[in-house]
Length: 322
Image (cartoon, rainbow, N blue to C red; front, side):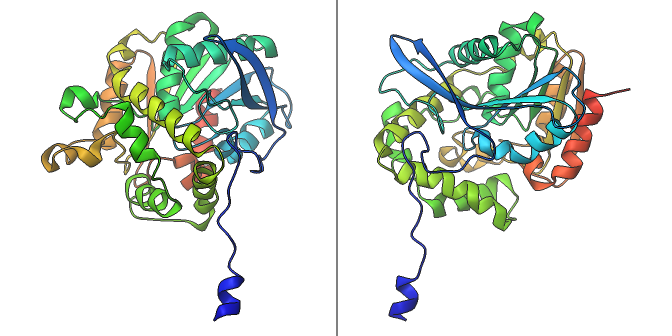
């Protein structure tokens, strides 16, 4: 028994910018100054492997995800002729985690716009997942003439949780919560909220990524930035501005998703009403001009990971209607 215990693989630990975790494609770094600080964004820039079509897709990750979690989508899009740019936002994954930063979706959109300008990307297709859907919305609102198309994959923020009555957490309260993150806690939350009680072994890699980042030498930095980001998500809704979007928009919705920020401290009655993506997807479709809704019955928060073939078929059909 002792030998068996000694042979167990230790839980991974990564640096504050996810040093030690292997990304699926070459990781680059964009250095810039923001709010008086020298920062850097990690990103992947993957050339078209199929016949190049001259179009670029920018993939925006979610709160509990990283650029790396777009791995299968990068391949599908690249194989279909697209250049694919995948940034990690400030405060996340392979990017800087400043001690003090005024987080806003406008700021993150501005940072991403500056990166794309340096890369010579002028008219991207923006695809945002989860929190990345809120950021993608803000990006399209800020730069409507510089976005070819907008796609959102189970975006959060399809409802305003605070207006519905979810209690407010201070940044300090979020920090306490984020300081206690464990792999088992992440797995339990994602299984129940993201995947309707289901789990696939390939998801463990992404759990280890998040837990290892939090477990590493940058623990306090990671938890503090995560707290600031949660405050941004909760207090900066985009749902009221869906009506102002002026680009063709696709909603890709796994209807078994129940993600809602703060639902864990909401009353049982309120919690039962939150994160109902069977309803939220249709409501968003009704609010967004020139929009298309594709629902994936029975899939959860990350249909691109649960059923990549079905997801990518729907996305590519919309991108190439002819």
